[in-house]
Image (cartoon, rainbow, N blue to C red):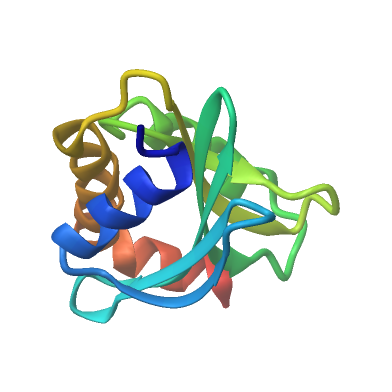
Length: 130
């Protein structure tokens, strides 16, 4: 039976993402699809869940309106959400999926959600990063 890491890796390849780093022992893949804005996305197989995490930008000024706008935008994101790292300065896209019943369509939906978010919201993300 195929393990979770191999299954996810095969899905990533089938979806035509490039894998720049992989560590099966740690359950980590780093993937790219530059034409969709996805660069150095971390994919963690941490049984029982799959974690997708993409760094988006760093907040330079502590402006409460940025946080408010990101939270409001979260309700429009199909899969995943904006999150902050432990420092509270780095904005990430993060999604979690169950590995047990993961299928190609579900993973593709999460990745497409980020690509759509980046295409629709990129100007605002650039503004926030300044």
